[in-house]
Amino acid sequence: MTNADINQQIDTAVFGGGCFWCVEAVYLQLEGVVKVESGYSGGDVKNPTYREVCYGKTGHAEVVRIFYHPHEISYKDLLQAFFLSHDPTTLNRQGNDIGTQYRSVIYYSNKQQLDEAVAVINQLNLSGAFSSKIVTEVSPLAEFYVAEDYHQNYYNLNKEEPYCQFVIRPKLEKFEKVFKSKLKKKTAE
Image (tube, rainbow, N blue to C red):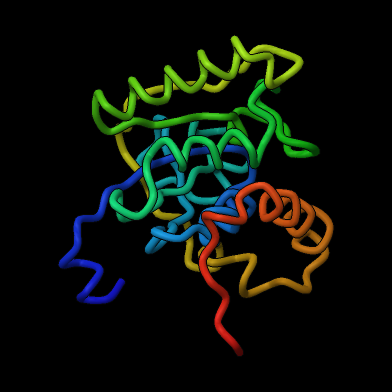
């Protein structure tokens, strides 16, 4: 984050929608998002490691903490991106990633986030947007632990890796089609 970012109002949101590499890659594309950190939340162990979380021994979920400018992108927009970028109807699973560490979860920091999350879930369930009921957990944010450095900005630093090519890239392509108007403008490289 730059000093200019710090001087503007920044809010945070914490979501888990499967592998945090995928979720992080989605949110890094959105205009108004300043930074995304991969990490762990919702478990019982202090300062968990990736290995501990990955083996389902801590109760934590793989999550991302999104730092954003609420005057540029709303929490509701972040929620819409969340529900578009993963399957919120599968319990403790996203694709081949299985276990409570991959659960669909929204960790709220205040009553407004709670109310908006519940309203969006109710709206999606009533609309029939998904063929099954949404099973996303909505819980208060207790503690967020930043994941190890090699997990941060994973997709952008490892685009040629098979997981990035065959799992993350297709998700991003789908997301980019639907969220065109909310994406950061690409600069010439």
